[in-house]
Length: 118
Image (cartoon, helix red, strand yellow):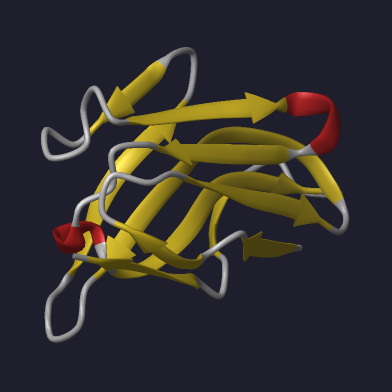
């Protein structure tokens, strides 16, 4: 099982980006899908979660929207009104039951860099 995140890049403050994360491999089911971010020199922080509804960190509420396409095993993070403090490596994360298993394992993607210039 792998998670592949993409869509990062350089954007000016006030702009938008859309991140995508695709889960692939031998997957039986996916529960929650998440986005985290890690700014330079800081810890990795929760950004958003989608599992029977969307949940957000206070710092991104009203600006970011998480969504999910279950048929494609994909989660998206639409980021609007970006600020320089949103600059970070964004990681996707998911609770997945691999084929042949009955238990959820937690998986991380490789991260995609988002840079917001002022």
